[in-house]
Image (cartoon, rainbow, N blue to C red; front, side, top):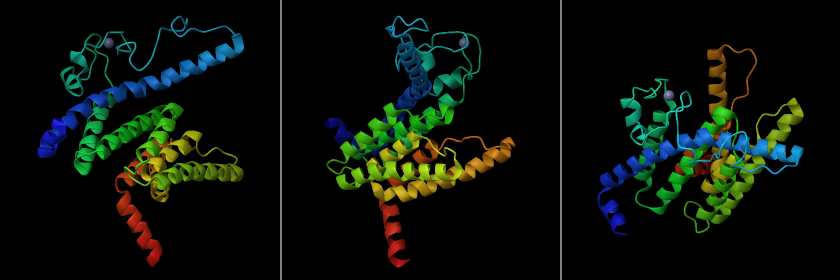
Length: 295
Ligand SMILES: [Zn+2]
């Protein structure tokens, strides 16, 4: 508890600690964003093989590769297989020192890595500054880090893995059990309405156009957002996410000069709008109430 007192007395120290720690978290998120889709694909392939072949497939002895999870094997250069040393793994700094290249084969390292690390750190410091030395900060950081991971996985692979969206929803209900952010009723309703609103939209859209406008992962991420911020933030979240998705989707089509519309992931926009709705839920709920009372 002495650490908490120290943090409370010196907010600059608190924010600095959060900043450095979040850089490391950002580095871990990079690994998760890269590895989780690969882990899922392996799982699916193994399940298919089990179904078709009926043979037991051992994870470790699987012919298609060695054990692979969030921590094993250690990170290596995808081009030359050079093992990333601890010194080369310092967030942002290593990237700058290496000039954005692999130390062994000089292949370019994606700028995505340091950007995600910096982005995670800046957002985390902002949350810590806004919410102070509280349990709310700790929970909100977890919420934010998971949303960052989900957004980037969706942007890259069009997947929103169940093993991230579902725990995020349950944890949202758990932290609100005693009303950390919103009361339990708002949280449970948020999860229910979040899922069902997009589920209904999806089916109406499909009935009219015959197309899939979204995926089931989108319903689940909105359920999670509702569980964390309460049902009250859902109208704002859906509205802002649709607006962002539409505007950026159209801009993207113009830039790419595409004739046919390519599917664009909706998850990142839901995550961004949901994050804003969550952090400013009091103001947004108030504004909505005013609007409907006066309007
Ligand atoms: Zn290399």
